[in-house]
Length: 318
Picture 1 (cartoon, rainbow, N blue to C red):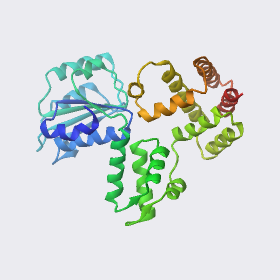
Picture 2: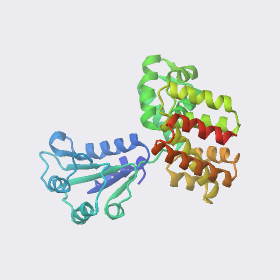
Picture 3: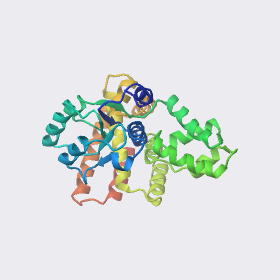
Picture 4: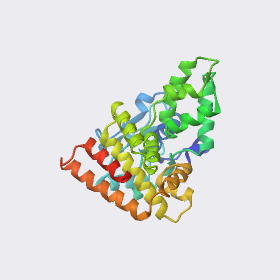
């Protein structure tokens, strides 16, 4: 089911096991919270067990899952961002085929690819919301603070935050505190106060690159690095954007199908294809090959990350 269907689903039935997966961390956390609150209302400290890579022990997980909840309808056992080994999967499969009815087990990660476990759970899809639903969600958050926002300001806010609800939520708190109750968030407020997500900055960088505007490209790189962005992180995101371009122009699916495969918004694919038109598929492949070569040299300490980043951008523009 989609994240937005979870609330109504919980009114009808609580499944014995869920997989919460998708690219939006805010939605993943929110889904976990909704399920937990539905199961546990009295003693969360006693009836919620959370395991991650640091404390994961499959036998301890199963011991908790088979324990009787204390003064609550159900116990919740969360397995978050754990790399399950085959031996773990086998034991968890055996449990999930005949689960304890008074326990709800939740597997949570950005990409959950364990098909054996997935087949025995209810999937909650937490990939990015549609722009319409995202806008409604953001407006609800703003209205709760008795604040208004200009349409242009809202559009820029979503773009600066790369349509990521976790980032948007943090920036809304800042903006609402700035304008105070009864105030209106204006375009200039967003531009002055909201931190641009690296993905958005790389989108701006790509625009300069396709225009072969070396001066603007290197000015933006200088500003990002001066703002404490890691050159290696910038390079990783830049390479990812070119992989997305290559995938978008070589895949025959619709924009929506490609967006679903990549876990991004359909609008992102439209923009990606527009940028990709400035390159042939052959050129995009050459750019990706160069990026892989540079990445390899960084790992071998044959290039430092800053020089590698500038070299990469210069070669694309030339």
